[in-house]
Structures are given as structure tokens and as C-alpha cells.
Image (cartoon, rainbow, N blue to C red; front, side, top):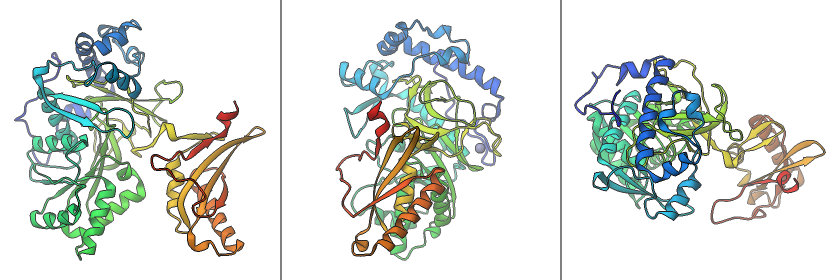
Length: 463
Ligand SMILES: [Zn+2]
């Protein structure tokens, strides 16, 4: 590669029976890939440094220059940027921030992402970026098994949800037929059943929970979801497609190949964590968006096999590039070979947690989502819960507050003790550590309208 941003030939298509979109790049050695990625990093950083006041300020302050990035160790020293940095830049430079590197005339579309807190993020994406997004997604979707002969039913919102737009241009670039159906309007799920029956799409895109809801709606109308005839279902927006129980449920419900995809809102529509049809989890398409997994505390890159926070770097984004962006998610990565032959590292369990929500108890990482799975799986409980971490002498203690369900209000101690023992047993098996259970009556734990704070770490309060 000699030019940045890279140029793609929009007329190129592999043969249908070919496994790879770009055979050489997808199967190259780690050393060759590192060289390819470093060259793209220098191109991307040089573009950003010359055109974005945001990066010029940030890197000048620590004496980093794009030309000085010769090795991965050099790159690991580039400052990490966070959501808060972007938010502050938007406040200081409304409404787009100081990171639009393209000329205004090159911008094709304005998109927004609606955060639940803070101010909205505005995306201004150039024509060139859309062309590269289409080519990137086509490559990733090809690995998912999608071909020009397919028709893709897109049951995701075409508004502020960016995943839909990336998947649409990717499917178009593959030359598949696209049905941008959308989701979320009243009655639309029932309509989806009829439209799928009428048009026979072969591929489904949406969230795992919506796919399961669609299946339920179909069955209520006497339609077996298998009769839809989907060959591939690919997902983003939720971790479910890499969670074994959900993945199996999706597979048995639709009788199709289940593929997880995604990244994080700020990086989208570059959805470059993407699974192949040969194994669960997702590949990291390192030559499109470069991903490092770092220790949540030291911010140093962790070895393969370890757990860490994905830090993402665009390599082909001319409009608003993010360089070493802290996702705040938690995942585990591996470089174990994949049967597909791609040499990209993988997130075998997808993205399964948020670093803000994790607590470490006696050396074990505990996620509220794991506790939630156990609690929500027991009909004897209301589903509301809290995690309390305390320290007694030198030992951490984990206490779970839960509520027994309404029908046990009049029941005796024996039946409540039975529920408590059953919950303790299930928590120990899931978390790998013993947790105490404090069982409350229904409605005793406070409910909140917004995101509930479910973790109370009393160790922090004392120190
Ligand atoms: Zn693979």
C-alpha cells in the first residue's frame, strides 16, 4: 500500500465457492499483518494529525508524531481516548467536535447516536468512508457465508442505530438483495412474519432478542420459524450470539448458521468484530480496524488467552477517525487457529461485559450479568437483585440480595430456605466463588426508572 486512504475496486467479487474475499490478507502471517497494519496506522495518524485539531492538541502535548510510529511498541504509547474526551470536545466545539478531517463538501450523510446520558454524538461520514465501509463489511459478511445469491432481511432500526447502515452498504456491496425492513414500530413484528413468508429472504440481520421475539410471534400465528428457510442469521447490538445458551437457542429455533458481529457505538458503522461460519465468537479484522486488548488498570496490552478491554483504532476512516479508543467492554482474546484458516485473532466468547460493572472478589472477576442470568432463570424470584461486596478481616465477602416472588409471601420458612439454598448453589456453580444470599420480600429492593445501580462495593467506601 502506498496511498492512504486505501482504494478499493468496487467491481471486484470473489467466486461464490471461495472462502475468502481477500485470500492473501485474511490468511497472512502475524508478522506480515503487523507490517501492513503499521503502514496503515502511519497513514491514518498522519491524516488525523494534519487535519484534526483534536489529535494535534492531544499528540503535541505528549510529543508523539505519526512518522515516529515504527513499531507496535511505539503505537502502544499513543494516548488512549475515552468517551469523556469525545464528549468534552463536542461541548467545546458543537455540534461536530474538532475531529472532522474531511472537507465539508466531501461529507455525504449526517448520522446521530442517541446516548442514554449526556449529549448526542453527531457523525458526519464522507462518501469515501461509505465506499470503504461497504468494502469492509462485504469482506466480513462474506466470511459469515453471505453471497450475491442471498437476500438479506434487515430487522433493525434504520434511524440512529448505526449497525443497520453498515450492514446495508455491506450487503449491497456483496450484490445481495436487501430488504431494509426496520424494527420497533407498533405491529411491525407481526408484519415481519408475513413479509418474510412473502419474499423468502435467506439471511436475517437484527438483535438476538428480536430474532427470538420474531420466532415467538411466528409460532403464535402457527408458523414454524424454521419454515422461513433462513440460511444465516447475523447479529449485532447485543452479546447473545456468542453466549452458548442463546446461540444454541437461536440455532435450534431457526435451523441456521448463527454469526455474531459488532464493535462499539463510537466505532460504528465499522463493525469489524465479525464471526465466520466455522466457529463461535468473532474474528478481529485487524487490517480494517486495529484492536488491542489491554489490562483495565495498567492499560498495557494483555497476552493472548487473557481478558482485557478492547481498544479500537480506525485504519481507513477519513471523516472522524478514532485512534486508540477505550471501549469499556470486557472480552477475552486468543490467537488459536480457526478452522476457516483466517489468521485474525478471535474473541471466542464475544464481548460479554462492561468494565464499569465488574467487581473482583477474592481474585475472581464477577459480572452483574452472570448474576442476572442465574436470578432471571429462577421463577421463584422477582428478578430484582443487588451485589454487595464487603471486607471482613482480610477476606472479601459477596452478598446477593434477591427477592422471593409474590406467591411465596404466605409460604413458610422451609420453602424460602429451599429457594435460598438453591440460589446459593447456582451462584457458586456460575461464579466460581461462594456468595451469601439475603432473601427479601417482593418489592423490598428499590426500583429505579433509569439504569439501576446493582453493585455496592463497601470496600471502596472504607478505604
Ligand atoms: Zn474463522
